[in-house]
Length: 73
Image 1 (tube, helix red, strand yellow):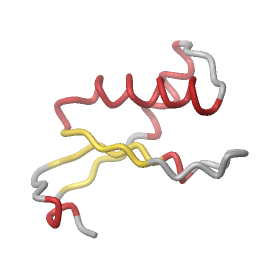
Image 2 (tube, helix red, strand yellow):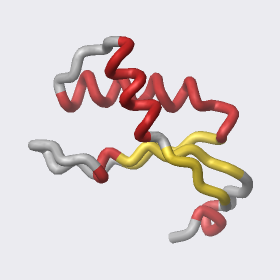
Image 3 (tube, helix red, strand yellow):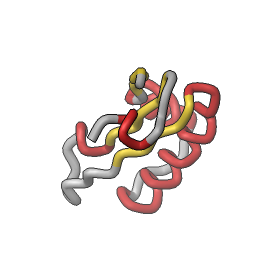
Image 4 (cartoon, helix red, strand yellow):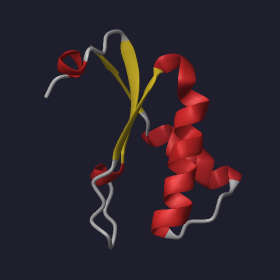
């Protein structure tokens, strides 16, 4: 499915947990408009802490921000 199939246009930020190995074989994908990066980071942190047992630290947040990709619809 393309982003345009969802009615999404413009630039979007994507956090794709499935691109990184984990014991849970997680496949969660989260999207946010490019102007809501902080919201996506917060959601990613919550997921990493609750689902994968990570600790919310500045270093973990920095790593999460590096994992976010930009796509255009």
